[in-house]
Image (tube, rainbow, N blue to C red; front, side, top):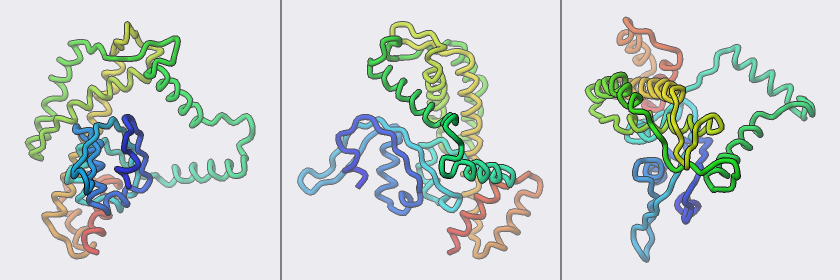
Length: 273
């Protein structure tokens, strides 16, 4: 069980390669929401003590396919994650096949540099910094955020977040916090190129611009997913043909990307089974 595996742990990285298994269990889904949400807690129920709660610091990588898109995502988890949808084009898939073919049986050779190992070693280095095991860097305790960044966020991002509230009724407070998380994360990943004064990491313009770019993409995709789910639920399709007719009618003045269509089609397939 998830609560048993995580009991007593303060920091975790949760990797789920098949999110459908989580979505199929309402209790697991709720536990995941609590772990990843602002609550940051692990809840479990025992016969002896009743409800038990434990504070936990968690990050998660959740992977799945378009078929996994269900109302579960809309009901709460979508506001606790940063969704990314990747749909490979034909040429991209061919490149993946070529790379896989060359790598089978160690075919890439001894001189091949495994980028995954480089990334893993770098993250181990960051972990050492935060555990005060690095003699060259001071553990990061806080961040210095220039006032101009806050002012620019108010001018550029708050209107977008408020419009999202008008469209959905959701406050998008977490998405505001996410801008600052992106800034802090980008600065920390570049700690060797940032000023670190007595544990205070100074954010730079590059951190700010990357954060806004990622936040705008995240908000846009969330709104598209919510709008899609709302529109589909309103229509209550009984066949895929009805869905395709509705899509042409609804989006005749808008451009529907292949990704958006694939997401909607798979959601409808789940709904009418």
